[in-house]
Length: 179
Image (tube, rainbow, N blue to C red; front, top):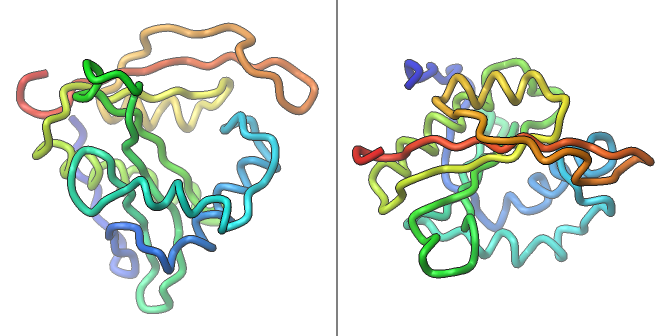
């Protein structure tokens, strides 16, 4: 695994909280409106995202971590680990994602969030992490490979957004000591 990135002195990573909901929604909506990174096509209100936020407790395998500027408190990005599938046998697998504010990309914030997320997950009953990347997305491909993900397949033209079809590459990596 990569060497853990050093956090800039003006950035802290912490669990997401209720007070972050508006900022997290704004970050996500940028990707809904402007990119094929997510296949949601309609932006959300913070109230519509409240149940999403509530799905991330402070412990356990499903986490929400935010990167926050210090001292102004601006949210620069977030990473999540979510259930991979609903059935019980998938309980030790998670799907991970990371989103950065548009003006925070290229600063190492995504790598910092993933490093913290995988540190947390190493102490949980998680065997594998999975990620899905809409292509082309060289920056996301590099980030996932940097964190030990291996591409395991590409679904061709699986999603339609902005009047065209998009491929999605699926990645996996072991988590914890038994991988």
